[in-house]
Picture: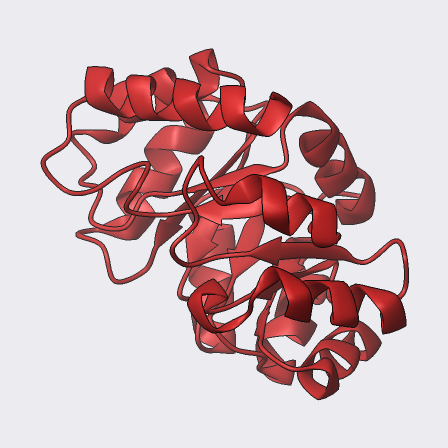
Length: 212
């Protein structure tokens, strides 16, 4: 796969479609096609498979082959070599729980979308200065809507702020009002053992709540 010529545009298009990241922690390669279909059919445009899932690169390769128009990649990316591995599997998205300059630099070198995890304004500005395309506000359980509002007031207005951790259809509205651009959705959307129909039902609830 050739590097995306413009990852900024790739992310902007996906966010315009639906700024919700499906986090499929624990997904197996065998489940990937059906779970992916359930999400894409509900309008999801961004999917991440955390690297602490079973054979995550295999799942990423399967998903990217089946859904070439969807922005697909990995979460829990902690070092530059993992970025290269995700790229080799066909992934175009790198999401981390933390801000590691080496991870951001490697993703940028390969033309990938990169969303590092931050929890403070200091981390947020450092990540944006390093070239991050958006920010994963993590863990959202400790970053209230009031905190998001305060960060939004000082960060660049075009910076994508994505709370992740404990997000449900019921608490998205308060974060959006505070200035969140979108969200990463974990166990409330997908958990190991959940079948495609259960994931589809959960996805529909999130989409309805977001578009509410």
